[in-house]
Length: 279
Length: 155
Image (cartoon, rainbow over all chains, first blue to last red):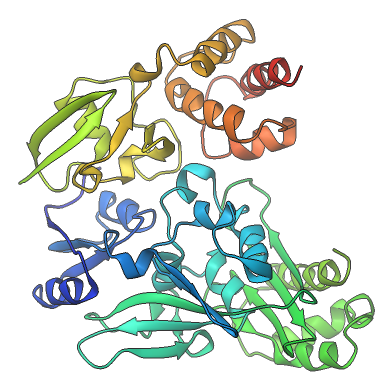
């Protein structure tokens, strides 16, 4: 299966990328690692007129740090993250997530920005970053904006990125040495997408707590009903919380999932929370 | 049409090609390097694995045009690579291939495992190989072959 014909251009900076994308009247796609887009093109699930390769753009390949946050360029690859390119405790969390994504050949090209923008319900980066209170930096014809990831997703494969916008950086919080996390995938076949993902991150020093589910068939979701009791009892809550309570919390989100998926999500959340307090 | 220049197995190549030509077809059809195989053209089977700037990637989901200025090594280009020589011997001894269709990609990934994961046990090898599919062998001989090379390097 070969792609339908298209033109290919390389952008050297964000302005050029936006101009090229706008020039195609909604028929252009940004190309980063291509690990999601290229299979779609090969299967002709997508038939853009123009691909704009954004990998040469320096801003998208940088990581900058401040006291409270770390900005990761959209074209940083999952393999670079796995190998520790992001400093500090945040980097260690990201590396732990990265190592479980697909296989190394995919990780060598797939980018963190591409994964967030593509919004595949079964992907790892969206739910992993959702549990961290991440924001997304977006460039477009209007002024650049920063969107909290919790407001970024609409539905499966649909984010709030407009056709003429580009995701440029992920803005992540700097975690302290006291941060704890657990990341659990129900993925019976090695290397395949997960059937359920549970994530639990708590940092008592920066006062952050995030419990999230992914592979819901729609958008990843925070479970606030579990976060508050965990904040109140950081050490014991994960061991004490029952699957019944987790099930009620997930059901309370009002999403449509079958009994098997719900059970897998409950297990994933429980095991992620326990792993956070028992590293 | 795009004109691209890249290095393939140590040789600089400049060629015009259709923008939609992926790297695997560029190598096979335009350069005659047919050791890189197509199994799925979706990035799932690993038969098309080559090295791009020294790391393994899937050539079927990589545009040739995006490899401008980069270095590609195919299975043909690694003929005398010491790790590849050891792996080929091990695949032969441990019956790690039957029809041979998955084998170039398996060897590419196996070389990455041997170099990047020197402590890998059976479970780690199987996890690293999860993106390379084989319809013939049941993977047992492949895992044994990789482990034998890893073990030889640990002693």
